[in-house]
Length: 127
Image (tube, rainbow, N blue to C red; front, side, top):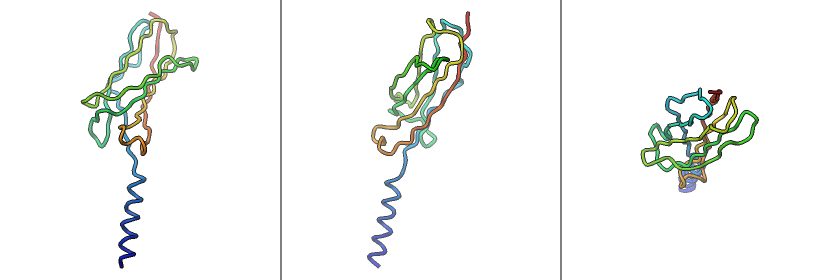
């Protein structure tokens, strides 16, 4: 009986050790059409268990139409679980730009993190 109880406790511990922290970046009303020279500003929040979560590391990557990287930055969500990402388009060419925001989780959950992301394609047009 003691062995059976020990086995149940152990298997429960093993299940919990495989638990995963999943947070998801959520964009709020993103604009998808911009004119060259206009600043692109994206706002959003980090959803973890259906609530905004602070201090979640996010990576923001912008890829140009030719596949090269325009921006690749990382910083955490603020104390309200929100984020803002901004980049300038003044020297860019017209076309479709891919923005990917990836959640890298809270520092304490990095070992069990599932990286979730949200992507957005924007169109950059001549003035």
